[in-house]
Image 1 (cartoon, rainbow, N blue to C red):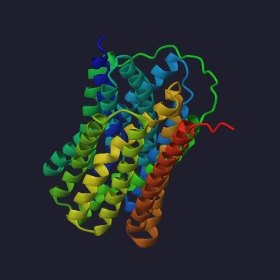
Image 2 (image 1 turned 180 degrees about the vertical axis):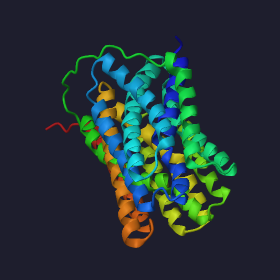
Image 3 (image 1 turned 120 degrees about the vertical axis):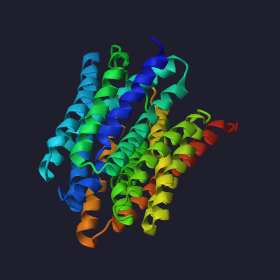
Image 4 (image 1 turned 60 degrees about the horizontal axis):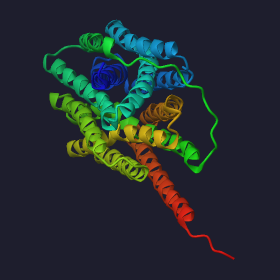
Length: 393
């Protein structure tokens, strides 16, 4: 079967698992709050449960060695995303939503790690690395779809329960459409101990950067719809922000995929995406529609591109440990994400708003970009040392 067909199936799988299974809570949050099912503090805790599930799913995915284990997690994650989204139709209140979001967090992490570990080597083997990069645009179009469906549901005066049902049907159709075309896992190669080099040690720094990125982006990504809803007093215009966020994310992946592929370029682009998102988070503090629009542009466009660049950097540092590092990095990312909603819940509880949490999120992204810059400068020093002529005594 053509690699393009299999990579397209990966694209749609991420579109469903991340766009619907993972991020459907964001456009639903204004509806759940307005219907009195939860309050803002509870919303932060439900989001945290989703990210805790994402963390545990990513950690579990690191230990899937055999092809059967990989396939079980991939297929199980896809089915869980559909079934748990459908079960949300009957959910009512804090605890039921918390349990269901925890489950979709586990499922979406399984799908992300397995699709990453299957699609990227497939694209490399086909000599089409840009095709592999474009797989990461799937979640962006998934977010666009969930936002568009939420907008239509709002215009038709539908409830949050009806929207969950619509999401479940869309997820089922996407999964059935690509089920037969997903890549199969090859036999896992034995892990060979390699000499630790400066490049390999860079995985630890990359993990810290990815964790800070998780803290930084997650608060606007989780609460953007609610902030827009508060700004526009529940009018339909508020529902435009989330699909625009997703569309911008997909375009960002496309733009980054056109770059020159080399380690130095990867680091520079990663630093730029982190600092752009920091500017977007601070723009959300302006407290106006224009500030939120700027936040959507600056946070949304680099969102998935940053994820793609981190995974690309991981493959540059350790090309023979794709799945292990994808799982480890996703776990660090999820740990950062888990901290974000908890900060939001504390911020809402003690200050009555999200402003303190947004300040912390923006600062985290600035620090992450600085660590990337420091890594770049260190790499230059190492290269200069290696290239310097030896003085003969």
